[in-house]
Each structure stands twice: as structure tokens, then as C-alpha cells.
Length: 142
Image (cartoon, rainbow, N blue to C red; front, side):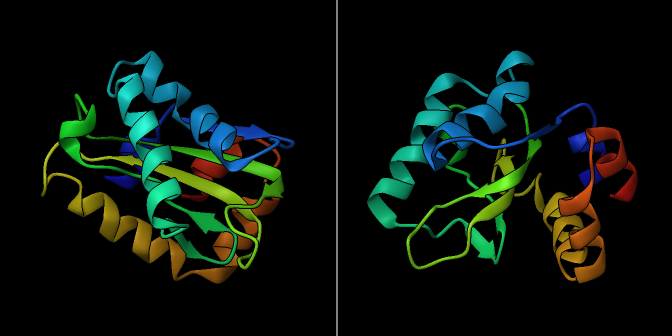
């Protein structure tokens, strides 16, 4: 399910100035497909301002998300790979991979989370994804 959700939703860019803009940029494919609304992006950013960088899953990887009622139309996911990482917090490593998770309800995204967990446990594959030059290569690695 992870690969299915990420199809045509992977972007690669050199750098972005700050984490707020990185979240906005990472959300673009989902906004364009109308699987999420602008208010979902705002909610993700507001949550981090309020709660801190809880979305940082591990060094170099973050998964911003919010509640379904904050603007999710359909369960969906996107990935932004930054060649030069962006800081979410002064006491955490810079982030290179930003997975946007938009869960349409409390359960439909669980298969994707399991797939993402399996991927994150493969340190070699994560390094290959971080080193990948384009979205097609990343999709094939997943």
C-alpha cells in the first residue's frame, strides 16, 4: 500500500529554506489531486509550532500529519526528498525525507504505516533513497 500511495507523489529538490515551506512543498501533489485541503497543511504546521518536532521519526526523516477532520478527503501520502536537509528543531538532525501522511480515518492508513516502518528499518535502503537523484529511482527503491 505504501508504494501505491506514493505513486506520482514523490518530489526531489535541492533545498528549501525552512521546515514550514518544506511541508507546504511536500503537500503539493496531494493538494493538486485534492486528497487534502489547504487547512490540512496549516494544521500540520500549527501542530509542530504547538507540540514541537514530534514528527521527526528518526535522524533525517520526518512524517508530518494531522487529524482526518482537519482537511483529509482521501487517505494519501507524499514524499519530498531534500538533497540538502532542513532543520525542524535545533536539537535534531536536519531532515532529508519528509513523508506527508493524510489519513482519511483512524484505520485506513495502517497498511501504509506498516510498509513505512519496514522501509525505515532498512538503513541501507534509506541511504539509497537519500542519495537518489530522482523520483523514479526513489519509487523503484520503495
